[in-house]
Image (tube, rainbow, N blue to C red):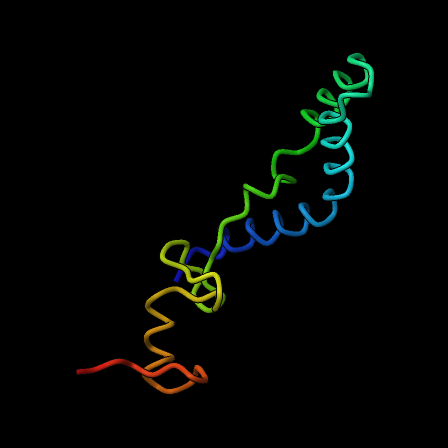
Length: 101
């Protein structure tokens, strides 16, 4: 089980990303647009740099929904490999069976 503080911090980051996504996308569009004057693009770079770092999507860590484990997490199931194997062995994941030969 991961520390509760780490899980909560990640949830706060997810909320902040959702809150600031539109503003961040607008600034990035201005920066990439070659038709905008260089001064405006430079100001957009400064405004983007002033935004909170945790509002960037790359700061979010993929964590297991059940345990909060940060590593070996399957994106499709949002579960860590340990929990995925455990639930699959119990038959709680539809269509997934443990292979044996």
